[in-house]
Image (cartoon, rainbow, N blue to C red; front, side, top):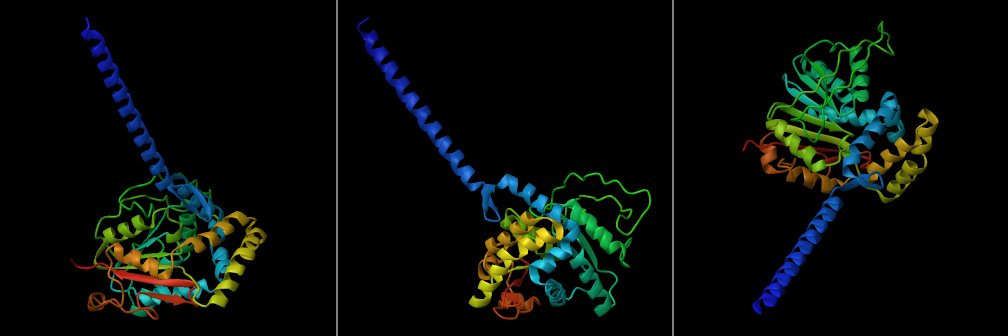
Length: 338
């Protein structure tokens, strides 16, 4: 019996130690959850939001501006975006019946330029473009535009719902009710589809003014690398950082004090335009984004290996090409053969 108190004290000691262990584990789990929560935040313009919310917030922005997309780009670039896109496509020089994937290409303006270039410069009617966007409203606008072109109802163009961060996955396709009769403003359109993009199935991957709106840019680049064939080209056109300090200050004042009021005046949507200018401000600098492209596995233009594979050096820095003093920038990369 004398030993019982010692056993009890020992049991209590073990229980206390166990309790301390459980508390330590609980604190560790709590700290891990807190770290996870910190890792799972991202930016939506200048706001910090849970990263699970960003996709829906961006979806709302582009659903709001879908019908006025060209007007939006005119406001954001003083109309010069059309020249930038022309330069982008001329630099890529699509031809030879290649397979192109235009990501975040909803309204079809890059796709149409790719097909027109291949046809007019190279008499190529075999090149095909898959236009992929996460926003159904943007894709519908693209279908409307392409329906007026010679490429409609041909194998050269298709529209597909998908997420740039997970091209191997499908998305639920919302139902769209067609009107009883087709009109220019509200035409009868085929239903959208959502299908996985196979690995090493594309010759050219383009993304224009879309990658800054993605939650995980590194995942977008990884997916681009996966779907491209060896020797395939990655090409991104995006707003950059202005190289001249005085012009940078003027452009920033214009972006923050003129563009949102224009959005409110033209389409009654100040908040969406405010987000768009903030998203430009948050996008990485030219050298930083070029480094991300290289870290995804692409060879950058200007390197000996990229040159030997036929990727031309870009004007200026070599790894990227600034347009209008860096208001917009083109980055390219090539997927190595091994």
